Structures are given as structure tokens and as C-alpha cells.
Length: 352
Image (cartoon, rainbow, N blue to C red; front, side, top):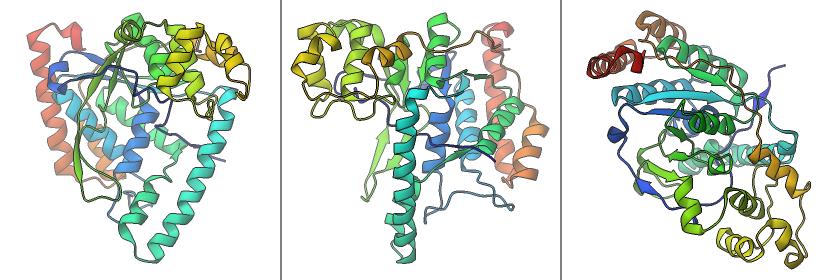
């Protein structure tokens, strides 16, 4: 029986605390980016849909929204001279079980609301609920890895949390940035977090006929700690108070700013507990902290970029998954041209 992965882009809510700097993807040319693969694939599954909310499918009924997003966004990054590395989740920590069940319940409820809205002809509302039902199935992950191999783009299999492994790549110097929508990457210790990489561009706001420009932004851990005057471990404690994937409820009534004040006043989560008499955690906070401070990661990977196998990519996407061949070949052609330009500007070893 195939497993379903209930992924999400929720994570810990630290947006009110972290200083951000907007960047243009063009300015990241020559840089390598470790991308949280499941985070990105989930976004593609949620966003790339037909007007009624139905995801893209091939003639066999297999969903292809994730492949469409992965292929064209990766081509776009390569065309800009950016070197992507996709990092896939492994086995989730046992503490994440509560969050996984919570997400499953949300998706089941959204499915019911989608079916009702669709049957009543409320197309916009149906699409909104449909986006909330996205589930990453095993074949989607396997297909994504196959596509990346054919495109010559490296991917890493994490033993546990993909964000933790991506953060580890940046700390080791094997990548310049960790790319994810979630702020959890900061708790895992990434020196540089890059947000809005896979969803940058013009996006429509839910339930409103309004479009906004989603701009990539960089968050540096060192600057976050300096401006808030806390340590990395204290940042983790703030995350635990607000709520993480391992204690999704957090402490009732505690937001990022209040959590920051408490931790600065008392020095640690344990020090603040006497003031939080109604605080309840699924496990001892130190166990959650340990996941972020010492996550399961691996050194068993090899990061090498190769020139795409044009016939292989076209055969997979066009012959097997019903993509438009002309469009696929044009996207590949643009990416390959820029790859060759990059290799002539520096050394071949920098790219391949």
C-alpha cells in the first residue's frame, strides 16, 4: 500500500521577529541553493491547478502538477545561473505524529468543503478548498527524483527532516542558501534562509480578485540573533513557545513578540515556565529542542550538476506524462544555453 505524505508550509511562525532583505533571483547567479523538496512540491500541487481546482493530470489520470512546477521552475533557476539542490524528507521524527494527524484532519475537512462548493458551482471557493487538499504521494516523489536525474540536477535523500538536511548543507558550505517557505530552517541552524524561491512572481490572493508580487527574500541567522539579542538556542525556545511541527499548539496566547520578551527576561523556556502556569507540551520541551539542535542528517551525498539529457527529459515528460514537447524543449534549450555560458565564465569544475 502506497503511503501519502501530508506536507504543509505552516512551520513555526517567526515572521514578526526576523529581519528580511528582498533580493532579485538574477543577483543569485552562480550561487547554490538547497531546496526543501517536499515544501516546493507541495506548493506546486497547491498552486498549479485548473480553474475548478482539479490538478493537472496525464491521460492515465496521474497528477502532474508537481512535475510541471518542478520542471519549469528548475529550468528558470538554471537559466538564471542558479544551482539548485533538492533535499527530500526521510522518516519524520516520532514527535511529528500529532502534527501529521492534525494536517490530515484539515485536508479531510477541506475535501468535503471542496466537493460541496464544486457541486454548487462555486468555482472560486472550490479551487481554494482544493488547494488545501494536496497530498504528496510516493509516485510523485519518485517521479520528481527521476526528473531531476534526467535534468542533471542533484538531489539529496535526508534520513529525517529535509529542512534539517538542507540547513546542514549550508552549514558545511556545500550550498550557499537553504530555500524553504518555513522559518523552521532557522531553528535547524541554517546561516542563510531564502524564501519565495519556488513561488516568486504574480500570485492571486485567496477569495479576492487581487494579485500581489511575491518577491524572494533572504534571512540571515546571525542578523536575526544580533538584532533580537538572543542565542540560537533561545530562538528555538521561542519557536517552541509559539508552536512547531513537534508541538503544533504552542502555548495559548503566546505570539512571537511575547515569546521573545519572555525568553529575554528569563533566559530560557524552562526559566519562563513558572509564569506560564497553563502551558502544556506533548513532551518535555528539551526533547523538542534536541531535534533542532542535533537533527538526524547524513554526509552520504554527492553534489554534481550535469547537462540535461534532452531526449530523456522529453521522453519522460512528453511521451509518458503528456507535456507539450515544443514547450519542454524550449525551456530546456534556454537552460542549457545559460549553463554553457556559466561554464565559460568560470571553470567547468564550478558547474559540472
